[in-house]
Length: 396
Image (cartoon, rainbow, N blue to C red; front, side):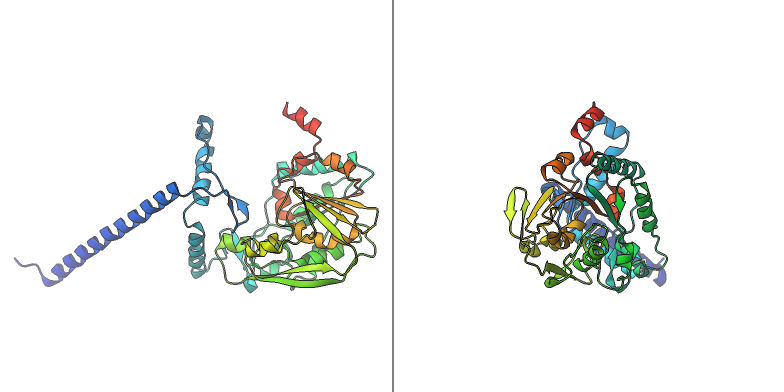
């Protein structure tokens, strides 16, 4: 008997859907196969210039790593970091998140006025305690040196009114105050008020986790008295050198809605200087060639280096040693006229003896300068501050 008309239509529709499903499945399988082949024949990248960080590498297989689960965790990080077309997928994920009204993308808060902000970090309590003890021990070994520390609050702390409504955000200021309370023989210099008074100004980049030159300038004005600086320079030529900067938070979130302006603050002074980076002497702290790269913030000092030495004609009889992260790259502009010699050490890359630098350079002042997120998660500062003989004894 002939099928009813409605049943025939349903059967034809199901047949078409089945064919479409097979085509879709084959298409997805082909895409997956292409992705696997692409990944196999594409060399792994060591770093991401867009995110300004090291990428996970293929983990070594071992019985211990296999049994404790670390191998699979490392493999997951590796495949996520080395996935073909990763930047494009991040952007697609951001757009989908925005359509669904998400408050964050890629672990980055999507804030008012097109600001992107990284959430305040949760302290690594064990490493933090060891770092603070190492700082106190270092200060005790060098009692003749003026010791200061500044932990800079991040944008999500200073400009919290721009955060998405009800966005979970740790009380970073309380974490900073806890650090200040643990110091011995080291004065803590708080710049929260100096920055928060200007929270409506562009003191942080909208697309990057760093502060701007303007933010660093306000912080310098707040720090100068505590550093014992007198007659310091407050007049600068402000030079905009880029209006196309998209920083690490833009890359991590996939949001490319705006671009930032980078400004250089050149002191109006007769004081001259030169810097030495990786044994190369340069006449300026600015590397304008970096403005052609993705990470334009590297215009300051050419990016991160283990050690930077600055020699000036300031004639102050004061020499400064700074333990730092990349926030100091920009901040150096304001320190230049204030000291005869400045040595910058980045413990993430520096493996030398910090105590010997004190003696070799005739250091009179030490400043620990970090942004809060970096310091609260740091695991290496203690190693830089520990004398080699003590470090060797611990390893034995």
